Length: 114
Length: 115
Image 1: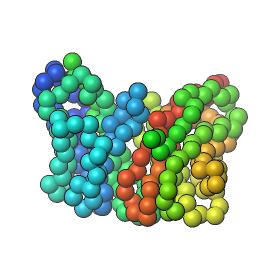
Image 2: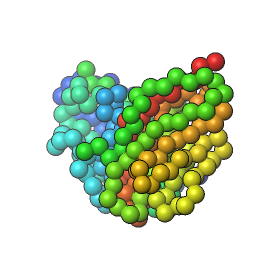
Image 3: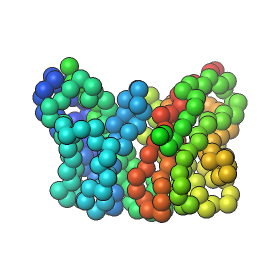
Image 4: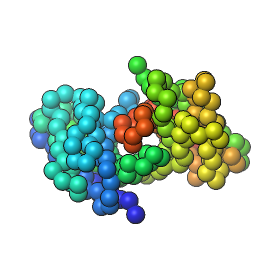
């Protein structure tokens, strides 16, 4: 079964602090995606990886955001320094490279920046 | 330019009625895929249905069907015999090209099923 574990589930931090969101896929996949969800903008694709290599990071808002995937079982999304407008739910999702392209989502990390 | 457009921010439908959620898309690729996801109030994203651009028949999965009109670039989701548990946010999404990558989402439609 496909599965994605994200941590933390909730994070409240103050403006200017560094935030690190984690994603652990627990089954085989070829692709890993980071999405951000807000009421105003819906689900935005931030970056995605294929076989641990970043393919498209054009959705990353600015240099304060960075993402890494050091191996197939782990990815991080880092915001430094954080700002109130970064408050959102951040989803990690995996895809298996099959034509149907179904994504398996984690439960999301809800970030609040005060 | 927005590639996936969902024009209905919110809808209210009586239980047991059929529901059509609109989705139009924009792509110059010949090969692409279209998806619908459901997001209940609990927040998880649930895959509902997939339609490939070369599929000749409309996709169906239980009470869900995708009304694919290629020339009009529309991929509406139809839910038959709606249930209270169908109340949720619904997202239309598209994968461009032949590969399983760069899946982008519309802004969603919030569906409310009334008892």
